[in-house]
Length: 376
Image (cartoon, rainbow, N blue to C red; front, side, top):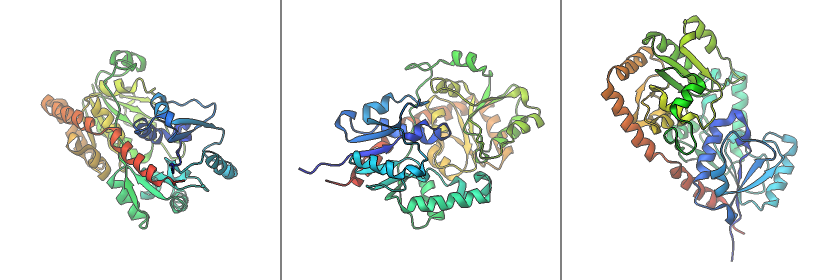
């Protein structure tokens, strides 16, 4: 009887600190795959002797781990990766980030375009030269990929604008967060003490990159009641200019802004839950997991009225143009002044988060990979 060759997932990106969002999506999907590690249907490549910032217990239950010393970026070891895939008898290789899709593979390649941020504006890419280089890299990557996955219809539309001949298939992201203080996570009070969280604060979670639009939050904070602070969670990106610290000083907000570059996963639910409002003013996104994470713990959300975020948040968030600071001030003052409005957002957010599970995308992705794998 013919048997299906295994699905191989390139999980090496899980160990790259600058790819936390992509790694979180990969883990979320794989943890909910309808398979068992013991059946050998899915294998995941992981970096030998590397430590992941994520808990991989759920992944280990679903797929078989295959250790390798091949780094994610290693042009001189293309042949070695091809040999590894051959030795695993791979039916398909899934690359969670399209620029890192294998240059040569003995089987079909499925990859993900998470967004078209760099294509939209040279500022987001760190300059026109970097933007052109990334577009060329993307065209070359998509030319060797059999099927292209995107997390939202908004991203599908963006891909079609920039790469008209590329067909895409939507596999949505999801949320797994639970209330703080459960299943080994830290409680709110412990987290407040650990990080020195303010009593009332707006929260933003996301890397320090231009498209995240954190500067708007500083302008808005300066117009809000002085008892309200802002907590920024996210790494700086050395590839792009970051003037947030300078703007904090210029606006006299040093005592009202707390910047946390590293927050371990066990503390994140409590950081979300302790916030008065979660704010997400991005100029462009491919999906938007952080607003869902905030909703999952009952925190009201104010977010950008841009296609991907509107698609994800629907009516469970207050949506405001990312170019309208006055609109953000008005929306936030309304939430602080009207407990009923805040409660409405909380209840809608919790309901939406319950619907937005990783199982939705996991089932779709697993079937896509299964049907892509060649039959012996």
